[in-house]
Amino acid sequence: MQRLLQGDQHIRFDILTPSPPSSPRIIGPTAPFASPAKHLLKKVTEPGAAEMKFRAIVAGAPPPGKSLPPLTTASPGRWRGTALLPMGTVRIVFGTLLRITEHLVGLIQFLKLFLCGFFVRRRVGMKFSRQFSKGAFHLIRSGRFRHTKGLIVITKLSGHIQKRLTRFTELHRIIMPQPSIPVQLLILRLTSSAMLDIRLLRENPEFFKQRLALRGGDFSSSLDEILAIDGERRAAETSLQSLQSDRKRLSKDIGQLRSQGQDTSALEEQVKSAAATMQELSRQSTEAEENQRHLLLGLPNLPLESVPAGSNATQNPVLRTWGEKPQLENPQDHLAIASRLKLLDFDRATKISGSGFVCYVGQGARLERALANFLLDLHTRSHGYTEVQPPLVVKPEALIGTAQLPKFADQQYRCEIDDLYLLPTAEVPVTNLHREEILPSDLLPVKYAAFTPCFRREAGSAGLGTRGLIRLHQFDKVELVKICLPEDSAAELESLTSDAEKVLQLLGLPYQVIELCTGDLGFGAAKTYDIEVWSPGQNAYLEVSSCSNFGEYQARRMNLRYKSPDGKNRFCHTLNGSGTALARLFVAILESGLQPDGSVQLPELLHPYFGAPSIE
Image (cartoon, rainbow, N blue to C red; front, top):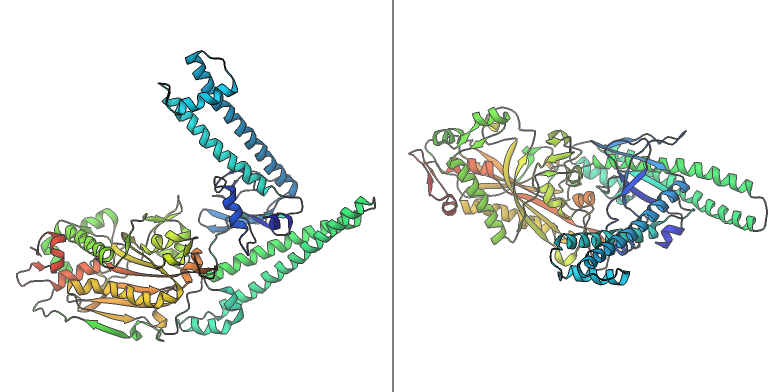
């Protein structure tokens, strides 16, 4: 902390604002002011710490004759920008807040004792004093006097407030800036780091170009631009550090000359000139960093060396098949079966929500619920996953963490007023459960299973392949998520795929497993296996699960790390897969279980969940 306060490091403020302020003015504290000061000290004095972060709310009008650099949109409804406040302004703000806080602490302590003393004095007729008030306070809290529940609540609440304000006071004393510290205010600087390691990219750009070229796109120009911006940023930061060192030396010389009564005006002009140059370099560095980050967000993950090369889905190799396809005299499409048995109602769903939605009815709704319960029981009881039920809306930072944003923004359902998104898959909230955390290595692997609806704007085009339940805007899915050590992720992917395959094996549904080639890999995936179940009515395999290893790609975006045995913080590896999607599983069960009399025979393991052996 002393190194931060006395050196030339910037203290960086994360400032949140729903609209671009004319000029930042701190008007109130937020978290982590409520956290103990010792926690903050521990955080910023870790080896390699170069910043101290806390949050504040900003508002206000620009001072006369001054303006801020242009603000740019960080995300819908959020803004970012930089500004350098005069040191005197910062000192006045913190000093005023500190004095107000100290007075509030004293006032609350006085009111608490006065109220307790006044109440007890009226009850027992004793003389009021500070010592008596303290004793009365403890008597009231112990419940010795009747009809004092309201006062007990007041005293407890005042104690809580006093504790919080005391921590606020301690924290302000710690961060009270010194005159030599340049303070940079950064408005909504998103905390996710680079998706790909910029150091490795800097050292071996050709390797990145070769691996990304296997995906089928041309990323060379983007990589070259990233490296050019990285060079500009590093040059600006180096110049800034040099000027900070010079300014520190000049300030020391000015102090010595003043103590000797000599003229320091020339040196003071040099300091002022350096300050203006430093402000411009700081702006250039921040702008370059944001541009670099924006470009990095647009780069997909590197395919693993073991991923087969190919340009599209037709070149995905089939790794294995399981089960025999049912021999049906008159195979039927699931829509015809569901219509006859009154399991689904697309017309009324369209009337309510539009195309691409379905309403499960009667035995259809019961089968959907039975499948969800069966899948959750299997994965939590037999495969060792912990069940979670996450929120169905997420912040944009969560979607950035799992790589849905900004690449696939047009496929998301967004609540614009609150800047929240309906989750496209439970992968998003579940993987982000541990974002910005450092997990102990002995806790890994972490395995989660979650059943949620999924919402996606892209429902596909019209035609046989997208009829009925094959593609929907909303569908149910059980998602499996793993967070593990880097050296274990390859084995965990095989285990994850096996867990998803077990679903189809237990239900007796034939399937095949394919490995996606480099040209068909998902944006954030490093390696993927797709599990496709046989659909007699479609006379084709349908994807019901996609199991992927993301390496450290997602962990970097959400700053998810673990403490290694050597004491260093390293990025975890993340994996996820469907275990499985219910809509297409529903299709396969209806079409594969079709009987000559038109009923549907259900897999035996579903009988206790559904409550009957068949759908009549």
